[in-house]
Structures are given as structure tokens and as C-alpha cells.
Amino acid sequence: MSTLSKRSTVYFEPAIHNALKLRAASSDTSISELIDEAVRLLMKEDQEDLAAVRQRVKEPEISYEDLLNSLEADGKI
Image 1 (cartoon, rainbow, N blue to C red):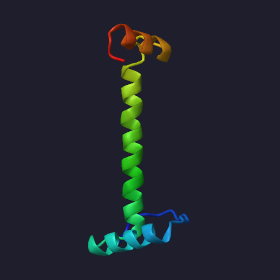
Image 2 (cartoon, rainbow, N blue to C red):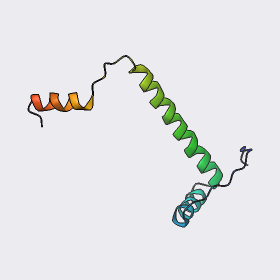
Image 3 (spheres, rainbow, N blue to C red):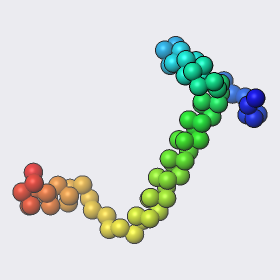
Image 4 (cartoon, rainbow, N blue to C red):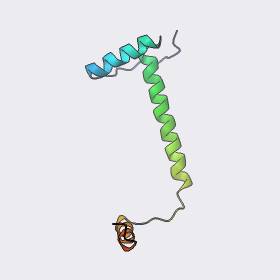
């Protein structure tokens, strides 16, 4: 039995909903548990992205125009 405790309504395109139903049935889990896992993975990825940004905060910035000029000067474009 699931330990999920909050309820929310989520709308899917019919094809996505059918795919979720098949995935849930084949993995002996519920659609709710699949969505919960997907959201957790998404938030974990966001957390990793934010950590990467924090690590790079002191890197020097370069404008897009300067980057293009540099690539042109190096014969890359």
C-alpha cells in the first residue's frame, strides 16, 4: 500500500495517460507513485543544477558578443 498522503488532480493527454497506466500495471505500482517518483527526480535534478551554479558563481563572465568576436578572431567561425 502506498504511503502517499496528499491528493492533487493532474491532467494528461490521453496518450500519455495510457502510457502511464501501462507502465504502472507493468511495474506493479500506481500512477500516483510513478508521478511522485518523477517529481522527486525532477526536484533532485534542480537541486544538482543549483549546486552547479553556486560552484561556478565566481567564474568570469563573457558577453555573447565578446564570445563571438573571440571565436572569429581564432578562426573558428
